[in-house]
Amino acid sequence: VQSEHVQDLHEDIKRFLAQLNHSKLEDDQRERSSELTTIALNLETAADAVNRGLIGQARLLNEEQLIFSESGWSDIEDFHDQVLSNAQLSLSVLMTGAPDAARQLVRAKDKVRTVEQKLQERHLRRLRDGVQESFDTSRLHQETLRFLKIANTAFASIGYPIAARSGDLLS
Image (cartoon, rainbow, N blue to C red; front, side, top):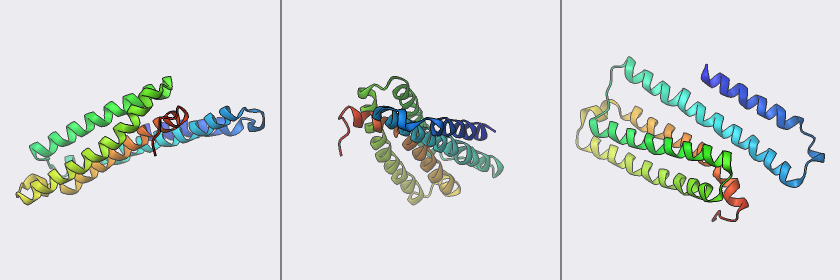
């Protein structure tokens, strides 16, 4: 139901932006309209990652009565906290347009990618060490990390146009 609401809002934003008379808009207004369309799509992507991905993973864990290993669960909690922090930062960037915060958000995206790779390595180490819970939940663990990374990428994309406009986006 939440995902449907997000999709409806996304459609409303696209309809509104499509109805704008682009020939009467200034260049910066046309650019901002395009940015808002992209932001709406990315927010929908993040919502899908949470609704279809993470909630689906939680249902499977519950239905199959599986539990993550203690260290695996700790990794997921820490990674979730980092993604949540970036989501909050992205909403701040969206509201304020602050270039410093946008730059921080772009850097945070790269950091999350690096952390996710390290967490995947830690998971593989637990498998090599024969941790039974890690075997039982391996696919769910890896997909949970992937869905969190997808949501993070969608949120972080909000910072790119602002960082680019201020000349802070490095290639």
